[in-house]
Image (cartoon, rainbow, N blue to C red):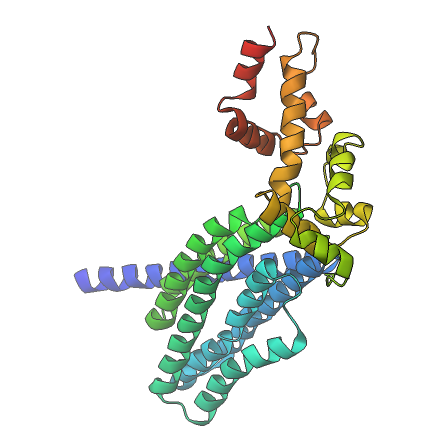
Length: 361
C-alpha cells in the first residue's frame, strides 16, 4: 500500500509539474509575441524596434521546444540539449539591446552577425558530434559572454550619464537609472538560466519561465517610457579664430551666451539641449562644451538648471507668489518635479516647501 501511495503521489506531482510547465510556457510565449508585435509597430523608434525583434526571436526560441513533443524517449536527452544549444543564440540579442541603450546607434548587421557566429557554431558541432563537453563549453561561453556584457555596462552607464549632463538640461525619460536595478535582476536571471540548463527538469524550467517573464516585463516597461536621444550630428571644430579665442578661455560667443540666458532666458525651454544653444550661438557643441567644462567648471546640465533654480527661488521668496511649488518649477523650465526637488535641495540645502515658508513669509 505504501508503495502504491508513493507511486500515485509521484504520478500526481509529475502531472502537476507538467501542467504548470505547459501553462508557464504558454504565458511567456504569448507575452513575447504580443509585446514583440507591439514594439515593432513603434515606427521611427530604433530602440523599440530592436526590442520588438528581440522579443520575437525569443518567442521563436520558445516555440521550437514544441519539437520535443514528437521525440522518442531514446532521443529525448540528445534533442533537449541540442535545442538548448540553439537557445544560446538568444544570449547576444539581450546584449544587443543593452549595448544599444548605452551606445545609441551601436548595433549594425555586421556586429549582430559577428556576435551570433560563435553561438551558432556550438549547436552545429553538437548536432554533428553530440558529446557533453561541447554542450558544457557552450553553456560556459554563454555565461562568460553575459558577464562580460554586464561588466561593460557597469563602466558604460556612468559614461552615458556624463554624456547626458554635457548635452541635456533634463534627464527624465532619457537617463538609465533603472538599468542599474535591471542588472541585478539580470544576474539573478543568469543564475536561474544556468540552473535550468544543468538541472534539466520541469521545476527548473518553470522557474526559468517565471524569471524570463519577469525580466522581459521590466525591460518592456522601462523601454516603452525611454525616449530616443535627439542629439544632432557631431561637429568638428574648424574655426581658427574661435580656437584662438578659446585658448584665452574667453571665446567670442561668451557674451552672447550670457545674453541668451539672462535676457532671452533660453532655460525656460524644458527640453533645451546643448545643440540648441550651439545653433543659437553660431558655434558647435565641442566649443561650447569645452568652454563650460574648462572655463566655467560646470556641465551644460548644471549651467542651465542653475538659472532655473535661481528663478524658482526668487518666485518662492516673493510674498505675492500664489502658485504651487510644482507650478512654479514648471514655469521655470523643469519638466519633472523629482528632478526639480533634487536640484533645489542640492543648491539650497533644504526642501522647496521649507524655503518658501522661511523666505516667502
